[in-house]
Length: 190
Image 1: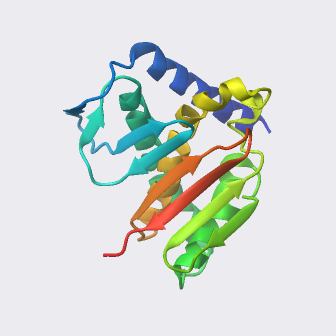
Image 2: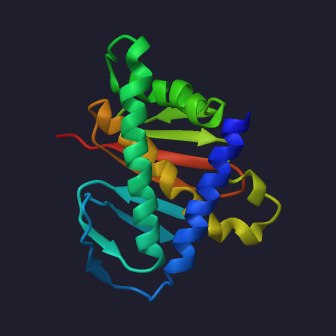
């Protein structure tokens, strides 16, 4: 129980710190020069997008989303290496996504994902009806536009874990009503 509270406070402080130092200058791209490969994150309404492979980041708050997603990616990679040691080799993509919904989600948020849906063509929708990082914001619709900055880390976390398990993906998150959150995972075929 204490671990969940510590993680929530740490995540909130990471978001607050990044937002305090980056004001949003408006549209436009610049190249990030960092010692690690950052990914691109874009916010539109209540949607956060994380995409692998690009070294272009926006400045300001969009750069903050980029940094949060990159942190989540590295944490997801580490969790992806440690958690499945007790499990057998995954046979299909669906088995990997089930692992994320059950084992990974329990390890991070002390609860399972509420729903997993697929179109059987490489797109999966993971739904959490009471996403822990959004519960405290669920008191009003005015916080809906603040949701993307609380989703970027988790998008990276999912993408990092999938990457470690051999699946290249694009992860997006959306919020229609707080604290429900949907993560869409699109598997990138090589």
